[in-house]
Length: 351
Image (cartoon, rainbow, N blue to C red; front, top):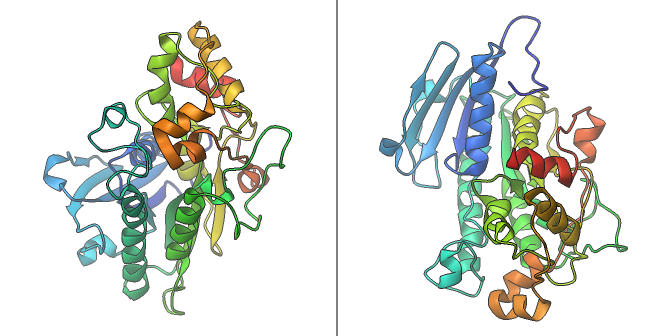
């Protein structure tokens, strides 16, 4: 059971949740936390996952937890009235991975430049199209609860990619992000605008919550999953100067922040949360800690010019650039991170 979940004094909390993009790492984590809340009798949970291939997924049904999959076209939900009635949350996690896909050798290793096969266009459209479609559906549906919350996954890339040691201070959710460098800033800005505009009509006053998510650490995928093999072989080291800030959050803290805190704190207005560990580290500090916990040396740096040759613009921004943001809203609202620093976060994955 996740650590912060609290049931209502009148009994279990009732969650009726629509999830788009629920088959990936983020969706699995959120659904697992909802399942845990139900299994401990803290919540009654009914989850509908929008899927392009619902027949390949396995539905679940217990006294407290129901999970089903319905077909959708990646743009507009097509739901029965019974699926819509009582809906408390619509969660949008859609978006093609920013660095995966393709047929090159590096792509097979899970790394891909943005110059290949219109990758940038697909990164943008895979986020904007479903976000706009769900927003229009919410705005047009008169049967939705006025207290429904639209939760949209965004990224910390909205802050830019120019945070280095002895440089700019960490920024919170109130920072002006209108003029920042990088493609991910462009993507994140378009994404957030699509989620919040146009605003709902007066008779459909749902609220939108933006999640600015740092890379989620897990051994089964994501950035740490890609790093484990070379680091286990003793081939790890700094990328570029190593002074660029490395944003992260453990999968446990991510799930707890979304389900146990944000979904349990009803939105009174549109809001933004930074989902990132509060204690920052650089690329060098992250690599050294990973090497220490794996008991492997970290003597094999990847110079900046090699990164630029292999990965182009994606490498310059994602690998050589850095982000330093702070989870001010979560901390102000009393959320406690189980893994606030890189040492605890990595240990939680490797245990």
